Image 1 (cartoon, rainbow, N blue to C red):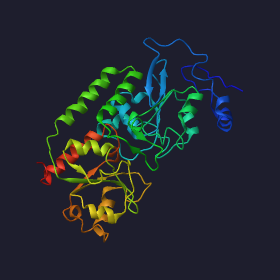
Image 2 (spheres, helix red, strand yellow):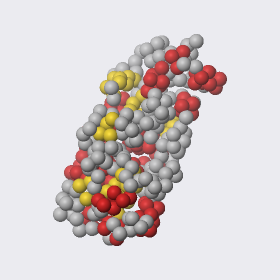
Image 3 (cartoon, rainbow, N blue to C red):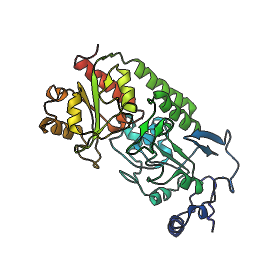
Image 4 (cartoon, rainbow, N blue to C red):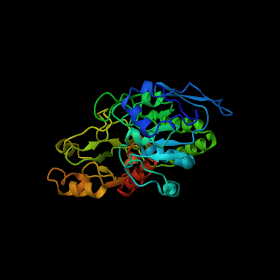
Length: 349
């Protein structure tokens, strides 16, 4: 039995309470009116259609009730001045950027980690944005097809598709290095969807200018990026956001011989690589061991395999947010922090 929406502009407003329970229990094809049925005339300048990760995202007006499934998506929309459109957020690893704190203070968090599909639908969203296919996809909150069936436009960051293979196990792998141009595409896409193109171009110009201002050339210097987990640490492979940072300072990633996004590597192999500098994810979430930078340092300086590594003996640590280590607007922050520390350590070149 199809469940029609109360308004084509807010397609899931009718799917609440008992109807939501029915919809979640039944095949979704029987629950959504579908994005093309009973649609009102588009707003001026709309519809707008974006090719997104092999799918089409279409909106008939600037979204007004947005759920962001990852912190990166939240901070990007806040940077575009769209905080008043966000009705739910989730998947936080770090405190919000200081310049966005005021705008983020009243944002409802559906969950610190993965929210339920029901909690997302309860916000009555007219747009859903995610940074990772592991969140907006199979095994995550819901698949894009499930949101489509309910008539909810959705958008996945292009940094997590294209040359990224999410079917290769773990956090996926890349066939080619990620570039900032892909992140700039995400900014432009979302700015177009929300009719704030000028803000998008201003944000891109700022990020480009900051990267251009990095004047460190640390050739011959190896950097290791440790995101989390002390038993089987997640380290950066060659080609994700840490690759952008490493290239910006002219250094080398200690594990640039693997295309896995975040391979888990044992400490013996890490000690053999003996990187010059260690970048530490300074996370505030509590889902893995050694989340904070302090916890990572305590581990490195006490473990018999790691305490004699050069970077550990010399305390060559670079603390950066988890968001900087993922493909986000904070990747530029990470590059700046890395450059400053390399200069401090005498590797500026």
